[in-house]
Length: 497
View: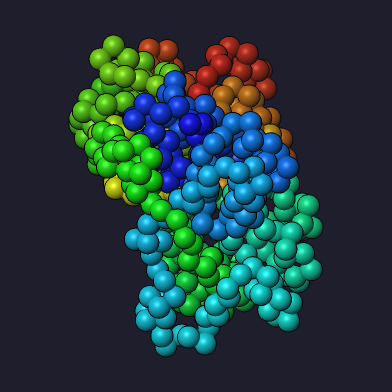
């Protein structure tokens, strides 16, 4: 019996894992490369990645399957219809996998019971077409939060803002639908209540469009934000209740094991996002050190994880798109993701937290629970200030790290220098030092001033050096700049005349 699973959902992944555990060969078809990444590697599983049109799907099923499981998303009506039709025309057995009712959550009745006093602001629609028709007569700014897939259906709607994932495909679909670039909000969720409210205010939104997607889709936060900002909400309801079977029932029927959907018990996963300070282990906080030592896997840039490579499993990943598949696949009890400096000071920790939360809520098993804790570290500015013996309570702290040559940030830095006696700045490298010195020279020539620039290089590491330059004294500055090594710098800029 040749089996095909159309997946890209949690249900599809669990079904595949159950078949593999039962020793059954099968093919999993997913639309995106990310859908493939979250699948566990197994010699019994073949993966087809890519979208199929009606004819391609018919050919694919004819060549590869006798039994076809449709575990696509509940809103993927067109895909489901194509799969069902292809199975009918090829004489293959079709099984629709439905999402457990407890995973959907937040029915219309729940919403109306919670927000009964604001019923006049909520309007429910059975499908996208009826919602679009209603929007044609609406005069105001509309925020569409239903994703990029159906954007073409909204062509012609005035003042339409769209919130989509920051992917090339999403942007392409926006452009094909004629969405203005300044009306595209490309952001990675999850979206909190406060962030939803901020976006409504920022773009002057008068009406929000959402799907009744449940808690994992951020539905309650959207509704609450809209009502608190006193705007209307158009809600596209879930598809009509489908006929089908759950993952567990399908595995019991087709592989004869009630428990083959589960495999190893899922576990609670503690995720630490850790600021490791300037770098040297001596400056790691006790909380951070304990969290690293008790973790199953340590993620981070190579230079950060190298001290632990002999005693821990380390992986040189520091982006959510790389860390998330490992957590989903391995389900470790505890992991640590390392960031330089302080996790709350120009750090990627916050972005990582949001991305991991969204990914785990979307793709993890329903009974897989997790907790994310951010552990702060010593900031590079704090460490640098202690090295040079100068406090920073009366200073401005900023950063042009990763923004070399950006005129907006350089102008803001010069403005800060003009208005403040001391400005601490994070730099990307030697190139930034040269740019700052050149701008300070111009400023010194115009105003008859000199500026002291103190540089901290590779702080806490063996090559740590403190260098002092004077902008306005060309000869000494030129010599010093030529001698500076490549690497990471922190600077303090002060006017001395």
